[in-house]
Amino acid sequence: MSTLTFNTARASADPAKSKTRCAIVAVFGNELSATAEALDSAGTLRAALKLGDFKGKPGETQLLPGIGNADRVMLLGCGERAKFNPAVARETVQGLSTALNACSTTEALLHAADLLNDDVEGAWLLELVARTVTVGSYRYTRTLSKPKDPLALKKLAVNPGKGLSSQQAQAALDQGAALGRGINYTRELGNLPGNICTPTYLASEARKLSRGNSKVRTQVLEEKKMRELGMGSLLSVSAGSDEPAKLIVIEYRGGKSGSAPQVLVGKGITFDSGGISIKPGAKMDEMKYDMCGAASVLGTLQAVIDMALPLNVTGIIAAAENMPSGRATKPGDVVKSMSGTTIEILNTDAEGRLVLCDALTFARRLKPAAVIDIATLTGACVVALGSHASAVYANNDALAEQLLQAGTVTHDRGWRMPLWEDYRKQLNSNFADLANIGGPEGGSITAACFLAAFAEGYPWAHLDIAGSAWNSAPKGATGRPVAMLTRYLQDRAAG
Image (cartoon, rainbow, N blue to C red; front, side):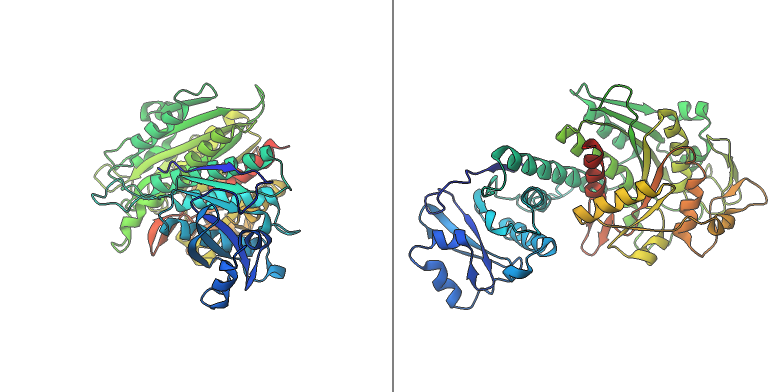
């Protein structure tokens, strides 16, 4: 993982006298920012603009030889000044991250004050910069004999101008970097192959979070304990695999003792063959990503721990591998969940809801303030929303709105979906209390309705991230929805 650090430069520093290996200055179209003008006493930057090669479009960059105490200068295009808003700022910062990845400099200084206006607030921008550059530093190396070179950049200093105190600016950078690391941790877990990232591996990663931290406690329930608790639904999924299931509970106690925890429940199917209802071979390799809900719980908890948020958060991960064998659950089998509800399993490839329902019942024991489950649950969600938004279901309007708002602020967006009784009726069964599928129509909705039956008695939301958790081209985990979840928890910590 990257050792990249961020720090705040003195707002009063003269740009021409600031010593750096790479000074990064804003350019709005063909107009130099105030900092760029102050740096350009000899007219070098103005001359470069007159050549016309650099247009100043959002995210466009150009490296030039050094001026003053800067070994090199990076022009950072920001588009038209009057149109610079949060969306353009995200595009600009993403371009900056890409350029830094291609640059050999080990240290840089970003003059960020010129990027601020009534729409783009300082703390938000600094958090965005640290998050984006940290996420951009990620390299998958675990199973590569010749991995890509790591990011050369080791330190990015940011001059925030005079709108923020140095303490406020550093806090924003630290939070953005912590979020970026949490996202990258989630990506790393998602990208690992299923022969490495097993339920046992997830349990070992969860234990690492509590190592040396008195505020974090990890407990791993083995299959014997799950049987004693009556988790017949979860255990029906692991029945065909040689890999034992794990129910992983991570408690972060950053808030007041006895305060109700925010609970995150992650689907941790470390490989999903479909079981007896086996999947087609095409893209089956991507079913290693079926544990991205669990990975997002671990990544969010890491960010929360790094930020030392003053609230209590508990992560629950229902981890299992879904495989066909002579012991595997069959279509038509009926199992009993921890809640006592019986379930007719019409399709063993609808397994995520089977592990989550027992985890949701277990969550009730914690007397939660709210429970949010995160799962790569249905292909129907991909059809409905594509990769741009995670589906948001909730039995509580306030909780749904809080998640949607957190997604808007972080650009890790969600879209609310219905939980009407009309869809719930599709789960009726002649042989059990519920069927685990509701037919071909509204598949993401009926899956959420199934989970809702086990989430009564507390505020609950379900995030279906089947479309947002990974990309097929280029292939890789995205780390979503760690940004949404972390912002949601930051907002709850702030009261």
